[in-house]
Image (cartoon, rainbow, N blue to C red; front, side, top):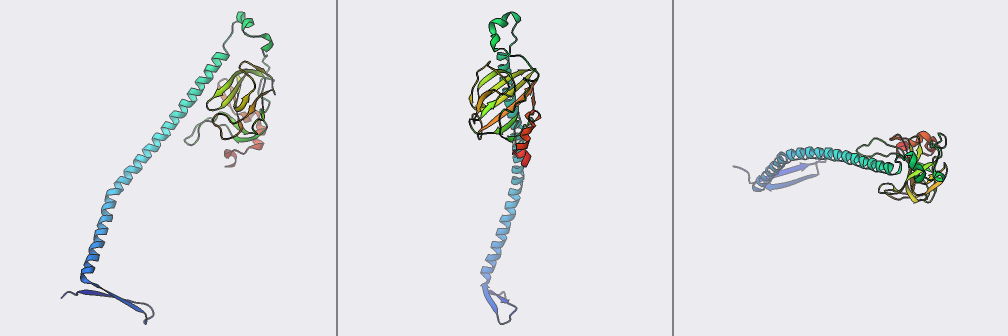
Length: 256
């Protein structure tokens, strides 16, 4: 004859202390049935969701690869767009003028002579702290940075790194108020995020002249100068010309 109730005794190390509880046979069968149902639900869920999780991880991996490829394409597009803008600026401002037209196009009082001393960048444009170094190779987490960033007080005078002719003075989306100077011998310097440009296109500047006031225009997180040096279409690290900025380097690359 099967029992109608089940009794469970719980005895501790102290024999005087014990607990006892009983459960009916029907409740025991119900409890066992519920445990079996729960186990079956868990097993079924795992059987259903494990392939889904694997598929989700595979799709997530494909999505990350697609985002990475898209980022690279956008970086290339941005660089090509910027190079196209620079080419257009150079074409419009440095067109070759024939000898017979020089007198009518260029005022002799506004011409400048190429000097391999005065026209090579040798004057630090501002006195500040280096917050970002040059990066000419883009990564997934960081885009190209063709120059250095120097943190300064807003309104700080920006000096021409060398003598030359201003071939661009105006607004750009990334760098805000931007000045580009041609120094001869295929040297160019860029000064971005200016609060105010003090020279217009085609202006002649000498080494050390104040050409702009530092600001935070364009895409910028605070007042600083974005400074670039180019030669023959290739970007050059400004720290090669101005190693003194390394002494005040607070960039993440230096301290990270």
